[in-house]
Length: 136
Image (tube, rainbow, N blue to C red):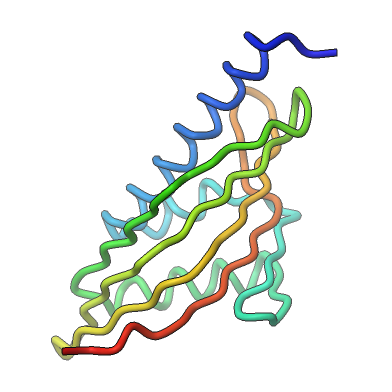
């Protein structure tokens, strides 16, 4: 069994990794975002299963078309699943400005499973639902 200190240390590392992932999105740095994703990654994006390659392709193609992205992760909670795995859950509110200057926002819940890979942590699974935020 893990001690509370071990659980706390893992939770801090995964919280830090989740915040670094958010910051990479905010910086519109596709390669830093991709660096957080494990090669065996898959996700459910609005209920549709998407694997690693299409996810990476989507990130790389979409980020170059954006002027601004404010990901806005809120209420991050980390549940330690074991020495090498943890679940991060949070709500997000993405404020986006595309290449044409059009602004739009989405909000929703996200779950990320992080696994320790070598010295770091990578996302192996994600689930995100995107709901439009009505404009003014």
